[in-house]
Length: 388
Image (spheres, rainbow, N blue to C red):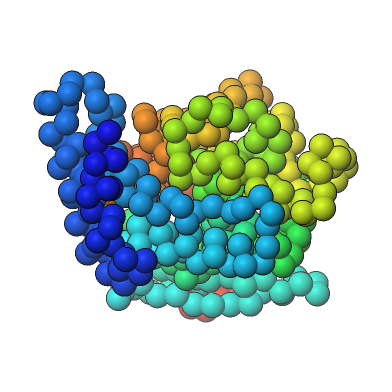
């Protein structure tokens, strides 16, 4: 009832573009109002708030945008463009402002006849990823394979680079519906091949990271890496990953997460397979080209998975984690009580997100230390004279 009252009072005074034009200051004001209300409610109505006040305020803040984060059942090109616009607007507002010390370089990498756009992101100075002493985060962004690009994610990745003191490699893979999901997957596989071709030991200093659908790309890539006898990264962080495309059929319909709803999830999947294709007509062979196998995790590297208990994929991610453990995978599942999809990205608005990011920073440090120690006896020549 509290959020309804606040929204009814304030929303009429917020025009369509006001939050976008003054995104950081205006959203901060709304967040503080919601947070203050949430801090007072437990005294008035004990048990009314089940999570910390700031995290609850983040959820309520996003609810202001909720009508815009959707796709209709009869998908059109205009629907897709609107979805991209509004999704980009809210994410860029929630991510921190890009520091003037953050540097971004665009490179087009070639693998056979395919070109892949990749961005190097680093705090103060961009080091060559080919240098044997340069630790790397290979980031696959979310967005349901429909939206997401360097403009949307660069502010978050600049924060990552500074926080972790690492080089971030952002892959602008091809998106649907302009391209197929099979082509998207081809891009991330080719990127991994390019990295290994440049340095056969690069996996010892490489950490994977992906959120939402980008997490599913990492799961698919890991299964490809293992089936093709390629070296695995030192570890992979998955924020609210899609386990596969089939899990939507087992979603808890009573989930309270409006940020990533069941309706949006199923419409995204329909866009992936094509408007004229019925999901249950997709063959196993066709599915194997666009979705990870449900129970094929043996040989995976250490994983750190975050999930909000209120998101629609909570049960599916929990079940996937248990299967991974049975397969012998070292995996941490960090559950955000009462929190939403990809909550771990929003450290400015949720203290739980900040705590998670600090734990992940320590986890990455430990995994890279193991990787660098295991590589200390490996003789190699650093070709780039700029490497230290």
